[in-house]
Image (cartoon, rainbow, N blue to C red; front, side):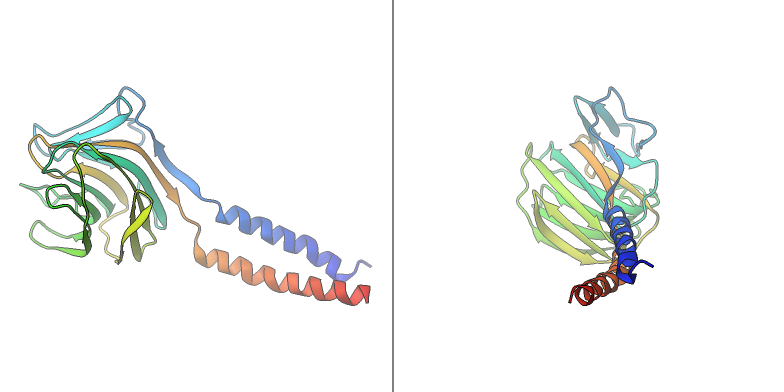
Length: 237
């Protein structure tokens, strides 16, 4: 009969292999906007005004006059949103909404209801907000941040479902606690009107491994490895 520790080894290795697979991030959406038009399997455009637009050209998607670039699919937390944007007017606001059902607060601003990150070029501020109605909203985190027209900024939004963090150009600038949600879609839009615009470069949405599952696998694996180590010491002494 094989020693008990020899049977534990394959089991421990199998669990560790499963843990590695579970921890692997999964790309849920990726688009470099290289085609001639928006990919209708990934995006829909919401145009509140006749002058609103979302146009794909030259490797970017440009939202103008409160045009909204929204995902077709919904995404469950935890996930990470990566991308880049360039604001093209001094008084522009560029917003990234998530946990949204894509409903808006209506005229005149047409803010997307949900949780959002806002970049304010005219106020030199970045913030994390909860948007309920046109007159009812909550800025849950904000800092002064120098933004320049024509400069490209790289962002990373991490949403665990209870905590949101924003990194700009690789540096974490804001974190906030929030569970507010109206849905599970994601949207990017120019906040000002009528002719301000922001160009958006490669967008990637990536799932994040569930920490609870990771802890469970470790809880199963570590005792097995400890047992294996003890049995090997006994058998060789």
